[in-house]
Amino acid sequence: MRDQKLDQLKKEYMDTPIPQGLDALVRKTLRENGVYSIPNKKVFRKLGAIAASIAIVFGVFVAEINSSPAFAKSMEEVPVVGNLVKVLTFREYTVKDKDYEAEIKVPQIQGLKDKKLENSINEKYLQESKKLYEKFMAEMQEMKKAGAGHKGVYSSYEVKTDNDTILSVGRSVLEVQADSYERVQYDTIDKKKQVLLTLPSLFKDDQYIQVISDNIKKQMREQMKKDQNVVYWLDDKEIDPSELFKQIKKDQSFYINKDGKLVIAFNQFDVAPGYMGAPEFTIPTDVLSNLLVGNEYIH
Image (cartoon, rainbow, N blue to C red; front, top):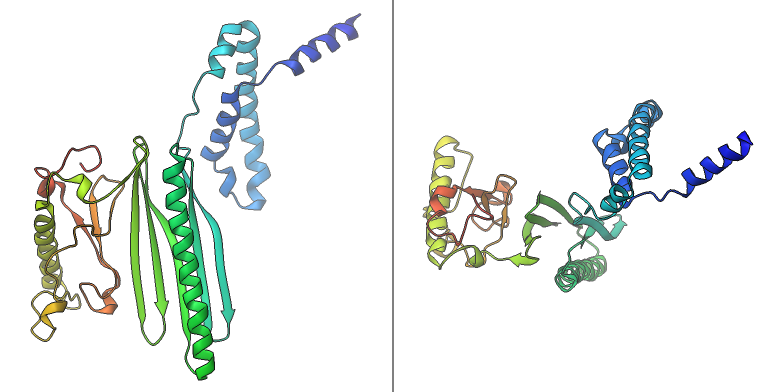
């Protein structure tokens, strides 16, 4: 009789549905305790302590569910907390052939509610990467026929900002041959409104072009004054006037950093010699405050 009662209790326990929120809670607990980044030798030791805490949490869930059907129903309706938008490597083109090398990573954004926007961005990433790979392969074949030279192409991506409001993803391409050339491009997405932000969309009118340009020139001169090795093409009489930096483009590459500041980005050789790399300038918000549409993104 006692065994039958135990079997019945066990069956009721096993048949109790696990709320959707519990799985997310377990994964969150594991992440917060560093399980996914712990060296192999430490995994099981760490898991022991975490398993105990998870068991306690699970026990509380089961007790509440069994004692209160209303609680169980409410847990099913709790939304998953956290950021579900992520950036992954969708594809990677790799070539290693003596004097020729290519490493091209294709990012893919996942989790946007607007699938049309998500697909259009991902398609852009894929097509640009494919074009870069095909260009490299064609140039490699031509250089092989000529019997000389070497070439490398390296493309990667980086998540600059990822918070409740925005996602800023940066992509860079470094081409190495006789010299090197790096170019950068950023996409900033409003995750709440599901829109791709542009530089003009942040401002009331086109005044931002001159205001930002003047601030960048100021920063350039301050940097050059502090360090003689820092060089920007501003007033150099030996440089072709057409090469001197005058102002940013209307759709200049940019991103919004983790502190909510606007960062303007340039390709290598755009505004400085090659050894300066791909310069970036963080624009003080007080310089922009009267020009902004709002302070939702930049503050």
